[in-house]
Length: 425
Ligand code: NIG
Image (tube, rainbow, N blue to C red; front, side, top):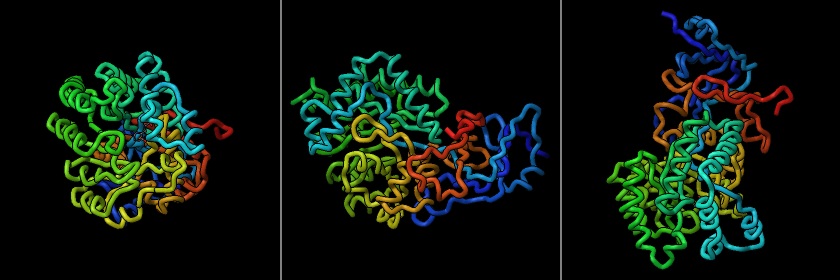
């Protein structure tokens, strides 16, 4: 029997399927499972057939009023997945950007009440509607760069009321915007001013009040902690993550970001889904993450944006079979980059990753970091019809043409949600 479909994308030069629903590691990260002269058929937002065009045409029955897209022999990939962002906030921090260029240190700015705390102040004062408006603007930009799934963390509220406000904003954005959103509770992002010198009280507030109420309202899938000097120490991080795990959250950790602090080892010990940053990861951390299948979320945009050179040892991690993801880490302090293609370029240049590896890191591996590997991240029958058509001759041009938006069309759940105009903008 022929498969019914309401969307057919045909004449695809290179279709990067990324087939799979487990994180790719080692050499597997370079296998994009490419089909040439391909077509994709989907119905009601779900992929029903993928393969060589001549074969697919035989298999399908195009329904009345269905849509047909000619990809003009260009490159097609799964919708990109940005698995680490802090995109719900108010205001901007360009002053801090220039202070850092003059030599000021990120943690000293935070100690003085600036940095994350200055954004907390603005978010507490911002209305729900304003946060939505800002969020939609950022999501629109991201969509135009080919991102169809994004993770967003709270962490600029740091009180029960304000953390809930951010998580409710994230929920509403998910309902209103085509990009699919996964929500993470990051109440442990910094110690708020009112808990200065009462840090244990804030940790207790997170454990005893914030985690249960966020869970009860079903506002977050993951719990994350910024573990490091000047923020949450190892013992505090472990207590928070332990409580979160008992309540049924999946875990993430900001680990070894501004210095080595055994964060990667703790992520492995706690059975976290992923650990992020990892610029200062130890050999023991690499070994333990490998043993416990912890996914690494690498964020080269932040190292670049902070004018540093200590990129995470991506090659070493790949050689040690740790599955890598790449994300923008879009936030007002350490990274104002919203485009995953720019992140791919940075990863190629500064972390010596291959074109194939950076594409895997922003598709199927990123889906695994969000526990969405059965729905998105690859182009396969049964998965969501989340697809990007790129205006390039071959996929190696995606990280190569730095700074250009090469995205021609974005399809989310089988619907075109972005397309370039005739002049290519
Ligand atoms: O991932 N490390 C913690 N959080 C962000 C920075 C947030 C901010 O400075 O506002 C990061 O780099």
